[in-house]
Amino acid sequence: MVDLRIKENFKEKNIEVSFFKNLSEAKLQILKLININDTVGIGHSGTLQAMDITNELILRGNIVFDKELAKDKEECKVIKKKALLTDWYITGSNAISFDGKIVNVDHSGNRVAAINFGPDKVIIVVGQNKITNNLEEAISRVKNIACPKNAKRAGFNPPCVTLNKCVDCKSKERVCNCLSIIEGQVGKDRIKLFIIDDDLGF
Ligand code: SF4
Image 1 (cartoon, rainbow, N blue to C red):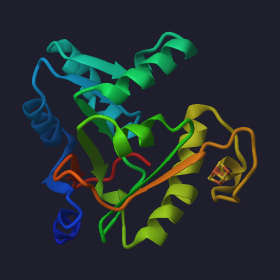
Image 2 (cartoon, rainbow, N blue to C red):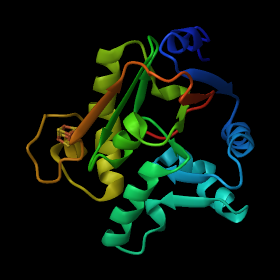
Image 3 (spheres, rainbow, N blue to C red):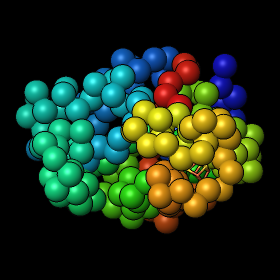
């Protein structure tokens, strides 16, 4: 059960929190908020894949830039860049802290770039399993839980995949090249944080 006081902690940082019972409820709200004429960038996330939001948006006529639709590496790069300049960006997160911080790591940096300073409207969808008590625990979660699993899923093999913990490697297959900590926002409610009362993604 999510401690609802987290909403106030993020509100102080200009980040709007909404709670949802499940992914379907959150998806309905996303489809309500985004107009059919809006363009949408998608940051790769197991949670969003489970929600199947990309297909839903495309079917109703939105232009969507999701790297998972790319035919090859070149197209993937182009899509990642286009997703930085859309009306909306939707993604998951590796960890959020109860005291109001959003922590993410990226392999190439496209997702953290979009969240930090890309589209004017950003929706971040997280399961309650991504909530930690503080920043230190959030970074630990990202490095020791999210990175090994995400690396394995993406077909990379840095040491954490075998060890199930981070050893701050110098591997060429290192997946955590960009670490982002969002402590607040200049613009009120640019970032909307959707917290689902369920365990989702890594
Ligand atoms: S630094 Fe290396 S071992 Fe640590 S999380 Fe990143 S890829 Fe894994």
